[in-house]
View (cartoon, chains in turn yellow, blue):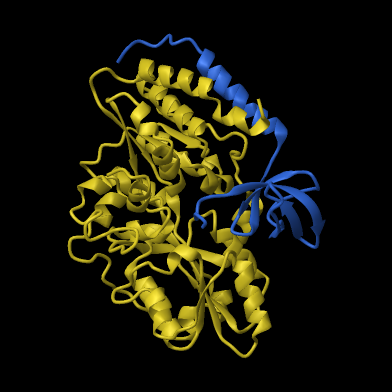
Length: 360
Length: 81
């Protein structure tokens, strides 16, 4: 079998599904929550939910960094763009709604908004055009934050500043456990965030919350094995932290990446779209790097925005409380072509993934 | 199209001053930053938005397959819930 196909072996899939059926509870329903848009994509794209017995439900938590960015921070980016600063951002940030406008709306009004593949491209642009002010809208979880940190520490050109809107995953998982009627029985932790922060970042979940937690990779088999590992813990009545993604995730994670994040950022309380303020869930630039802080440099600081348009249920979809199909706007007023909520905009948003996979 | 949590494996072809040329397969070559990881030519790295965030080794890939086998072969000695 070709090397990469060993990770998609249908015979293995069949055997692990049998194991899942054998281990799943017979009557009580268990709810397993993941917190990663890419996990949702794997689960939906490969139809994994259809392989699970009716007593195993897999829900999607707030794992889409673009979706959780509050309108107020999009408003800050829009304000920068309308002030004449060239705003650079990742592709799926462009259409995320602010209170009134998205960056795409600002661009349509003549503002200079440019999509980049990497923060490196933003640095290159700023060097190439020294007469122009640039701001990079830094969105993403711990997978993306090290790249922002490293460029800040490298002392980029003076005409480049950063609108840092990075969020942290473990506080979002703690939020889910605080929601009384959500009743989660286990966590699938996000593989690529974990390559950076390591297994150790999740130790609290089995220890303090008695929550089975398994870090998983992104092949369909990775997710199926993680589900089985959680079901096995539930059946044993134990809660452990386990690593399914051994080929990429270690206990310590990427120490170099953690070190640069530690040097460049403070961890502060942060707003999440529609979910309110989560303690210690957001990175901001340290005072030493204030000169690169776009909020300071251009005096844009917006603390409140309109996160949800009337009827939009993104806040409930994001915590797995409802399925996209339970939102009254889904595929009616809100479609991938004309999204209303952030979950339909981003390619990691649950609504968009469901819409694109014809889950309707 | 890119997803923010997604990292793509690629093979390191050349290294120069903290940057490396990597091969994503099928001839797609790109320069990525490798200053967050310790790599050498022929290593596989996980690349996220232009930065290598982790090194993947063949041994660890085998380790996944071994873990899967072990899980499948483990006898269910557990009592039904």
